[in-house]
Length: 455
Image (cartoon, rainbow, N blue to C red; front, side):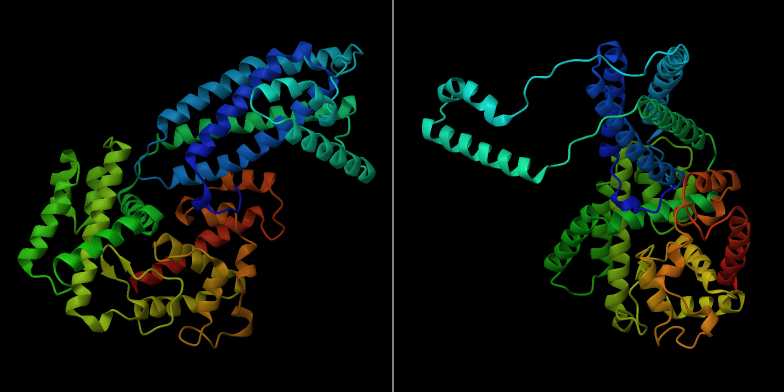
């Protein structure tokens, strides 16, 4: 696991990079006996870099799949599991064994000696002039290009620009081993995410994840544009006036009609009870496009609900408390910041060290209350005059305090924290403030803090 923003993650990019790695691996293995030493060095370096980057993305993928309500990645998971199983077990394992045997026999681990064509642009360009002129280039333009190329090469020669250094046989073998290990990591990753789909989602967890999906759509760029269009349409069609019951019914019918037919009955029954809808949806295979339309319809429904309530109760439109981190509405109902402050106040006696605020942050994230996961903003608001300005010194904290515990603990919901997964995270990442025993302490505290919402 890594400390990065899953919002920056893209599945089209992830899938494309995985396929590129598999293609590059095929090129390496098929051309192994034909490689020059320079080609071997460059390709091994490139594969190490690319596979390390993809392992970084794979950690985010696993986090996202753990938090996915509508599980759409089963087919890609199986596809890449098969591909990396074939690559690692079918090709790289025997290839690595053969390479080790050759090294033990005293053969140097290197490619062939092979002369290269001159790479100098200024020397190659004159030989291309006739071809370029036929394609429309002018003689004058080619002369200018030739002189510029020569000038640039002279400048670079004077500056003694860095060249990629060679590799010792030992370094070459280490690069091959690192690439192999990273491919094994990806194989293990796909074995794990396939198993995720074999675990049933509990009803309470389903409600949380479904609500999270609706909120994520609402706050996405696509969602914000569509909801702004929807809201503007309502203001235009009804002159910005408070909607009557008959007008609301008409708008509801329009929202329903945009929902896929197979989901309309459920939408009409439970549009105001998304926790029940989530349970009804469990186990159903819903097309990704249909699921997106359902989220869009529910987001519009909740916006309508919140808008009409504020029109009738304008005093609730503006919060009395300073707020930069909490969502304003969830499930179409206004978030009561006074209640949240009261709940966190009940948590304060349990906070006996400044790093315990990380657990408060985890609980609030679990409740889908945080509009931003920016930890410095969280620290500033918690110590704002409207919130808890008079904390004892040992309880005061900054965003940096919480950053020390990012990674597995920040990206995985605290109820899903697993000691084996955390141990794996610690083995791969340098996190000085984290240790194996921390997970149990923090999980216990998170559960105690979460109970404050029932007080």
